[in-house]
Length: 406
Image (tube, helix red, strand yellow):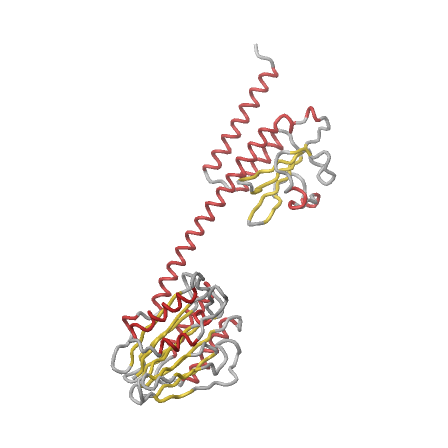
């Protein structure tokens, strides 16, 4: 006949197995971290009669005290980084003055990364009769199963969120590409011919160029760049593109267009970001080119007959830098001979090679003077860009707009 001690031991073993099964079922049902740790505290406190339990859990790059710990927060003066990170395995705390109110620390690591620390003690001063000593292996097993499952759930959720974000960025990139006019839709006639290049630094970018037919004889075009990079720059530029297209008609003067665009950008982000822009209007009948440059890179106007190159430099502050632009300069040029206009963003002009030198404007000028056909100018310029940067990566969005005016 089995003794009472043997029966109690068997009951305890069955109870532990049942707890492990309950925990496993809870994990499979995707129960929350709060639920699993509450269950852990209940098992230790109510069933195993371990009175003092404190749990620190690593969450969102911070160490947090689990709220169901049996000791009040105000009575816990522990800094995880200073007091606990040195423990890599179960350790007694009798000789630790800072932690001597606890008997043991149980650290949980995953791939050498600390995930949690369990501090436990009971009120029995006789270490031989300690419930912790009796159940230490079980407590460690339980702690590891729960914490690793919480971490796996977090990593899975993180992966899902990353996939969702990746998909959203792909959608945003596809939408943004549609905002950039395709070469197939460029005007092709005896008065104006256009080619372009667009390479965002990320999937989505802050560069923008456009060509708008204003009426039978007039075309408007621009190239613009948002300060900064990434999603915020792309969102601002997408909004700007819609506003510019709504405002840019043959009825509006370039000066008034700049004033309204500046107000829109400033009101939208209160000067935190700004937009540089080269904005122009060409009349194929009068052969007059009107342009303004708001803090954008210098555009180049190449006379195909004389090989003369004009630098169309910045004349205004960037859009959104100030609530009101102090002075707006609109310049006018007569295009009596065939010209080629080249404008680009600072992702090109500030591109560096391995020696730290930037891509000089003279390289664009030399390419212009080689008199390539419009369909071959940008491909040949790109060859020079790639040869120049060598193994260096593009650090910013790069856009190039090439327009032949006749």
